[in-house]
Length: 399
Image (cartoon, rainbow, N blue to C red):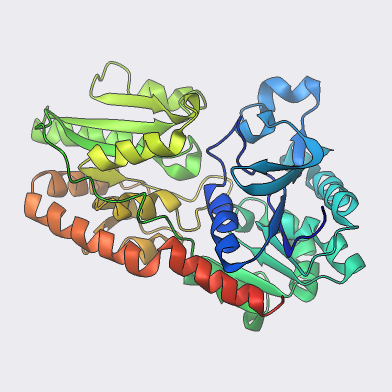
């Protein structure tokens, strides 16, 4: 029962109730098994006090049922122990302590050779298990953990930076953020995320001519995704150039931000698709990406300093051969190569986004070439098989 090579720690792990979350952690767990490793995912599952459910139940992973038994989720062994969680804004110390106890109590008797924590918060919460059981600890960072909570987390990061064995960053930008926070450069390694380039691939059987030119966004309805700037740019595009044959399709959880919807009122060319209403969200996203002409993700640094890492949707869209419009933000310029696989603009630059939209709308040859370049970029540098092979080499240093 307890014969696992390593533990993968991630609070929000996919489930039947919430199949969309943390797809990259799931993909790593699936792919690493091809190398003979047997991982166990420990997913501390938050229990929200009843008095807070109306305000906090927007986090879909909190709908996942908890269990102290090891169960299978699509061929991945996972255990979901419950712990009480309050808003991080006010109770971060409490939440980290509760998560730490939760992880330690459920895993203290497991005989494993390595812990891989996903996000800095999980790295902190895994320290007790690491030190008590003398297990090497790898922590992967993704952006959020170096953004809005970083000042509150600094005292914990000081400990993690000394006791953790290795820290994985998604990009040079993220590596620099870690160094600024005091993490030793010699313990930091850049390890990129990857996508399934066989699943996310160009669609070659488009037979009917589309009536509309399609711009598509796939994103959580969060401030850092910059969705409202893309909407304003789309409206400006149509107004400045008198264009009526294009449509903006926004895929995500459309219930989370009414302000975004209000921006698009009375515009029938802005369409919302709720990917959280289907039990096959990956297939829905793939379909939306394949049928679009240009993919858009205009990320920003949010008002609470939250930021991206290297958004997986930009990898997925480019793997489908789609040119992208995005921003000079975090690690995005390493994923979308400006004027080669897409067009990058400054954050919150509505006119710049609109100009990029018009440039790609108006130039089929550029769209085609960018799409070819984009596919090649992802196959060569963000291919999940290659990235998992590198992860295997990293694990072998400890196992």
